[in-house]
Length: 304
Picture 1: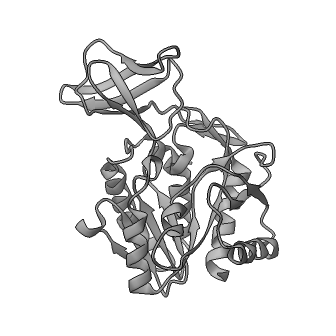
Picture 2: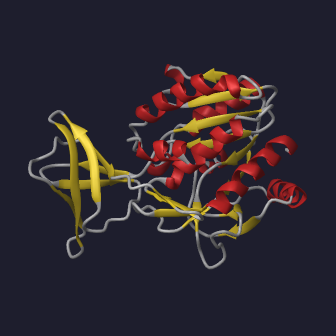
């Protein structure tokens, strides 16, 4: 879990993913010699801060977003959210501006619906603040801010160790409206003729999805994937013997929304571990679900 802890500590809110990009490129360069297949690494100005890893003769692409929720300093002590973070007074926030590193406290005025920070000076406007990382591991669980989606990134890196044929796409901006998957999907389709995808992201614990019961295969959220593709994934999951749960929701979304609306005929399915305390500094995931997520991705990338 040391790698996951490192990922959770990286400052990379939506729109400023470069720290994560640099970390991943360095990690990939250092560790790829130990992987079963050496991937082609695609990262250039056309891709902004995104990364593609292309293994062998790909048939399926895995999308994992690198960015996190957070806050942007507005004027004075005002904050505006990045994505949909929980807004409880007292949360510790971190960042940096021209005057140095910052550790401050979130304040939420419920009556006015206004967000602000408590700090001994005024922070430079435009500065991004994120939840302070308090990484906690027990025998059964891992808990930290930004398990969504640093755990998805971690699972993708674990998959890379044994992947023979496939693409792993590390995307940006997912938490704040998306934007990068459109050009990633276009490039993947036009260069490799791949049109089926798995979304490596983290979903919610609900009355129908329980911690410790296995990785989640989402049958729908605010969008509806093609049923025949989802059924194929469920069939592979059954054959694999990996513990899994089926999710049906009417809200929520992921990088899949840009695939759903793409000009090319993409099939997609969200497959990820469930977490509790969503979008707080205390997101928590059961280790059994982490293990089943990696195992199911290995099976799916071999069989799809």
